[in-house]
Length: 416
Image 1 (cartoon, rainbow, N blue to C red):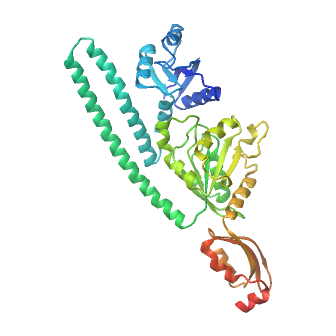
Image 2: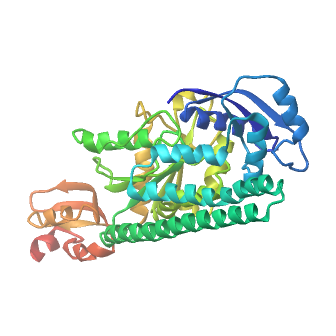
């Protein structure tokens, strides 16, 4: 894709405005658009064409070179038409930029359908704006018949798009039902689930790959896509993690968030949002190279109803963090620094959901405590000549193992 130059238009906002503009520039770079100039306007009331006719004319008079106009705020079909007529180039607002990235990144059938649905909904809205332009041109001649044909074309086009939208919604629901069955199977096996959430490009996928490597270094094919770019993947990925001295768990790498994600695109995050709600632990991954407060505000829009005891907040890219003034653990997913401390936190959360027991077990029966790796965690064992003393955590499905635990060695031998 050939690189394009762009000018960026934005109405000034009070909170994190500079960060928002920097973020949009990065989003544009993902689709090979370089923002060369930024034009902003303080406005109490929004005008048609975003910044108003006077400001737009000032920009045109500068005779800058650009291939596309980018708008930070979402544009109506009328805004898009006014901007296209003013600058005579393509116009993209933030939502349309993200939608293009989504179209590039979607891999799974569900992600592709959700992106196609968002694009179709946008197309339907734009049809009205294009018809308004057609109607205005036809009306200049005073021909009622011309307006009628334009109206008929609008109805045909909208019917076509509505049929496509209806089909996509049905297919999406069917795919979600299939995924729900898979999730139900996981819950039936009582698999402890840890979900990674965070700002896009915070390093969630790198952390997933690091934990996967620590779990089983030979499973290179299980590595997930990890690139230094926004929305490197739109699909959630699930991997089983088994590391010595840590209870096994399922790790889910979810889609990264951005600031002010357009509501029209929230549907593309439905699978991520449902996973966050259902997970046993949610790890919020912050990017140490970026504004932490802004990231926390962005993430907690989606996690604020999750109980505090289920959350673990970590700051990744420790080497790029100047100083940690937060109570959160700073890590490096790349170099594995402080990863063991993160695993200890996960272990602590897992053991909180289990019951602690201890006692003497006959050597011939101790193997039973290792038959249920997802339901029993042996903290410590001491092998004696006639018995084994074990400290274990068990869950509701393995309560029967308690009968093997005896208060003293004699009872253990006699029981056998």
